Image 1: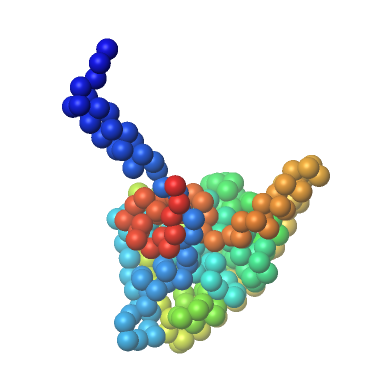
Image 2: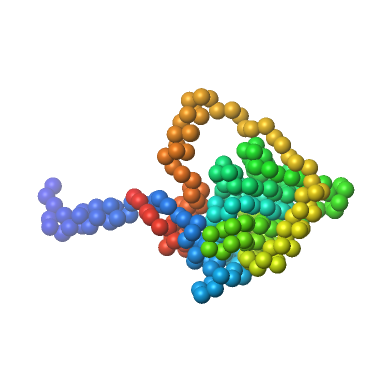
Length: 248
């Protein structure tokens, strides 16, 4: 069957469209870009921001991860922690040598098992003893020390660090860097950690020598930045403009 000129044109147009429609993958989504664009006030070194879920859940998630991967020390108290991207970032920061200490409510043991990846990776987790001090450790705050461009920062609010907290419930989330406020949170953290027991777990199932070697090779070739799950989502969502590089 012969194809006319119009037929060839249509085929060429379709081929061009399919070529352009190849999905892009993020190569680098930097925490510096997130901090610069969402936390820093122009002409000021003050950070005093408020965000709301679920509408800004994606932004909040990216801010938390950016701060985790930028800070030199992380202390905090979280009633619930189960969001995998945040857990992955905390483990990555711990592997880089960042000091992390987290107080978690005892109830988290029966609520979700995701946070158990943290103590298994060696991240210091402290369980609040509600039988002796208070029914619940209901705080939701993290203190980040020595974050580039913003210094010490505290995040807090009504939001649990969970999928529902970020993307389903009506919640609030604040980010501040005033020294007197951070000092108050630091005192609260030290008071809480004195009422806790350290949760120590054995590592997850040991890898075979072959798997371990392959993983070590991947770690050397692919330095950790933003977790893949969130990077891919952000690169195709509202925050795509903050992806510094893309590749087909």
